[in-house]
Image (tube, rainbow, N blue to C red; front, side, top):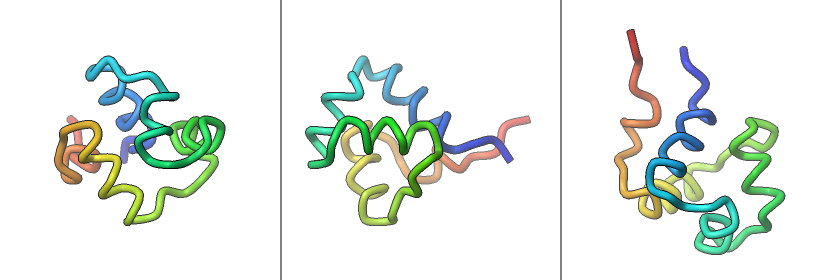
Length: 67
């Protein structure tokens, strides 16, 4: 299974959002958000719901399997 943390970063970049912008929207520190993208900090479901709204995607897109 592909690392879904990398997909979060890819979608952020596709939407031309900076880590700072997403961190502010999620009401967390930039460092903590960057650690989520690196897979160092686990993403809680409530934060995932907020993140997909910011990125304009569905949760299923993050966990979609690629061939």
